[in-house]
Image (cartoon, rainbow, N blue to C red):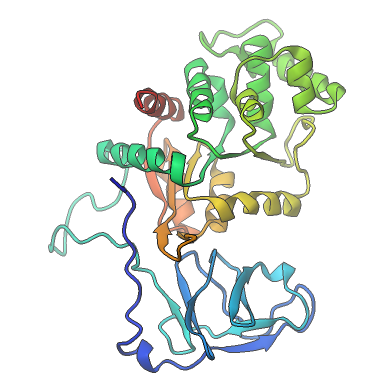
Length: 363
C-alpha cells in the first residue's frame, strides 16, 4: 500500500483564482541581483499564472529563492545565480492577486477533532512517537525502491558502537541514497574504524583511552597523507563504518566544512557556497529526509528542500522531513526558519537509529 499523503491541487476554476491576472515579470538588472518587487519563494507548492500556459506549478520551490520564466517554464533559482536580463516573477501576495498562489494545504490531513482548545497540540519530549515511527517505517520502505532518501547526520551517530553499526546497515540495505554531514562525522567514523574510539572514548564502553584524544588527529593526518578518503579506506584496510558503507555502495556524500574543523579531511568542502551547491543537488532529489543531531546542517538543508516533488508522470507527492533531536529547540528553530512541514521525533540519536534499524532489517 502506498503510504504517501495524497495531494489536493488548488481550485483554479473557482474564485478568487478563476479571475486572477497573469503574473508579471521584470528583467534582472545585473548578474546576482533580483529586480525590485521580486517574489521570494517558500517551500510550499507555488503556482504562477503564465500567459498562454495558465497556472504552472514551480518545480523545486524552496525557501528564499526566486522564479525565472523562460518560454512558458519556471526555474527556481537562488538570487545570487540569476543572470542579467532573465525574467523574474514579481509580486508579493500569495492568494492569486498577482498571479501567484502559494498552496499551503496540498497535503493537509483531515482534522480529527473540532475543539478549539486542546491539550498537547504540539510535539514535546512528553509526546508519544509510536505513530511517527510506524509512519516513518512505511515511508522509508516505500522510498527505498521508489524515492530518494537523504540522511543529514551529526557526529553523535559515530560515537556509539550500536548506532554506527545500525547506520551502516541502513546504508547497505538501501535506506540511504545520499548522506550529508560535516568533517566531524567522517573523521570520527574513520577514527572508530581504526581505533574503536570517538574523540578518544571507546565507542562501546565509553572508557577513556590513554592519549585517545590524539586518535582523530592521527586519522586526519593519515587520510591526508593517503590523498583521499577512498585511498585511506583501501590502504588502511577499513572494513566497517558509515563512510566505508557509502564508498562500498557508491552512495554520494557531501562533507561541508566549518570554521572549527580539525584538518580537515580531504574532500571536505571549505567554501560555504560550494558546499551549499553540492548539498542542493541532493535536496533536488530528496523525497524523504532524516536529519539527526546536527542543528545547523538540519536548518540549512531544511531551507533547501521543497515540501513536494513533481513526479515523472506529473503527479505531486510530499517530501517528508524528519528531525531527530533530544530537545525541542532544534525542531522549533527549523520550523521558525520556514520548514513548517518538518516532523520532530524527540529522542536520543543513538536510540532512534538502533530502533529504526532493528525494525527495518526485518524486511
